[in-house]
Length: 102
Image (cartoon, rainbow, N blue to C red; front, top):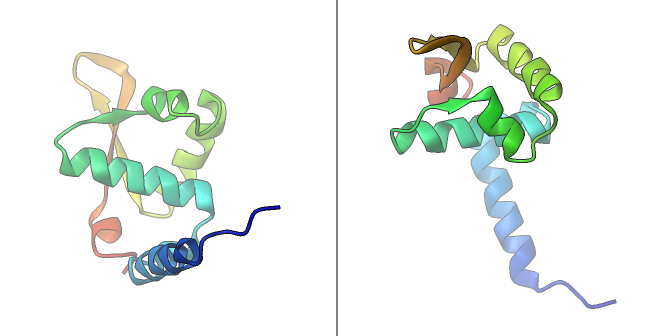
């Protein structure tokens, strides 16, 4: 078996430190990825939907919806109805998520 490049561990340590500083280390990995993807999209001026996250391989629509429901309940994200189609929800980070979980 090939050995991993030591730089891999350095990068992973750096990412773990960033997640801890942002308050994401208390969340499971899928929730962290969801928050990171919503944050990146929001920074890029793009609205993400449940379908977008499901299509990105984060699980089935039902699985993603369940995780999002928890993240809304915990105050990490908010879901707003799309004005063009009220069945569709647009996802955004809350002030708590932007402040790093505080």
